[in-house]
Image: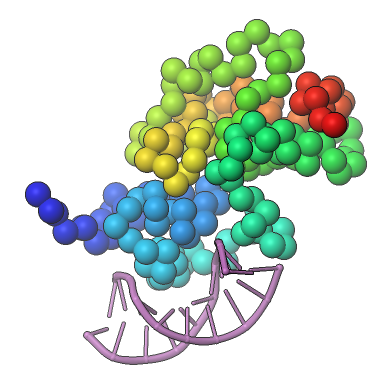
Length: 181
DNA sequence: CCCTGATTCGC
DNA sequence: GCGAATCAGG
């Protein structure tokens, strides 16, 4: 029963590409696909010519996007940090890649992610036109993606696009919802 | 010390 | 081609 870990099958490479493209770190990818070290992942990434990724995280990125702590507090901080910088009126991208899935602020929407919950899929079932919103801890085997129908031209569905791309006006009231300080 | 990716080099 | 060890950096 102890199958030796199949090396880099097409399936695994595809998985690797998608996760890497999604911005997950090498170590997270290693844990996600399993059977390989982060070094193996990095090595493969380089061999595939995927290196030179765009860093979604700024300086000190490692600790900066520390997830897996206190879901509630993390969510709170995420929202706050997201609306901290002064951004222009037009839909600016504030939180393009949230690490954990945080509760959507109870705005006017009755059911935030009701649809998304029923749609969530694993990385394997995630198609190109499906919402890539991460749900849960990427290092956990329970990690899923939203999987709902993504808006054409965007990686997210209608629900999550609203969270990912929040206009300045919207973000202001969100802070009140968060109830910070 | 935690983490990140990059590179080297024996296998 | 693979990946552990190592390196360089935040």
